[in-house]
Length: 294
Figure (tube, one colour):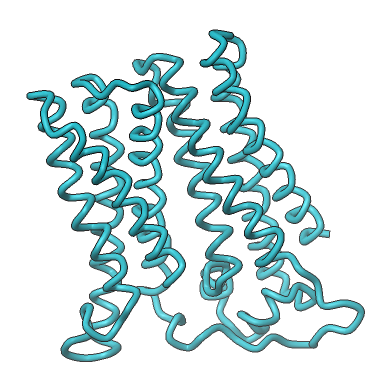
């Protein structure tokens, strides 16, 4: 039952993301305040639906429901509970669900923490984030569904989690890394919203800077945890040299650091505007590359 509820929740999240990507933009274009106002509730509906999907997948791991293909491929009954739960993001399908859930969470946070931002800008930003969610949710549902069943016959026990991932460092490393990756979607969304509006000014720099800083901090923590793990697991040179995941995460980290400084310049001096927009787009592009390498 949990798998079916999780699957339906993904479709509900997709419906909310579709509405979020369309109606607020129509509201801005036609100056309909009601449609702009609905951006925040739609972002919360999307995140709550994705939260329910995460809970359902975690429950499937908790009860060892090996009729779910993803659980059967990444867990078994002898695996400690902590690693059974961290196995939620131990494979491709679960990592995509984690990414989508965090994207929904960032969007919901915009609705809560952007009360000082004009409604039309919030509507544009959340619409762009809705479009990103639509892409990821469609990809997940059509090609990488974590709730696919093995029916009518399914194994009595699972194949086990990758031994390299049965480690405390690797239990916390991907969530922090993804918080940084997905956080850069915020700066991308603000950049696209500014391009749609045709205005980049000091106020825009002030709005985008805290989100950039938060994403950079999470990415820094994720890279530090991954470096620590790579060092004691792989030996000297293991920080980044041997691990493509660490290399892939370091590139958006550098771009995010440059973006953070450029946003401060935009806020204080209203210069480097085009450079800041370009950095926001590049940082998110490299975070997408890092996501799929992970």
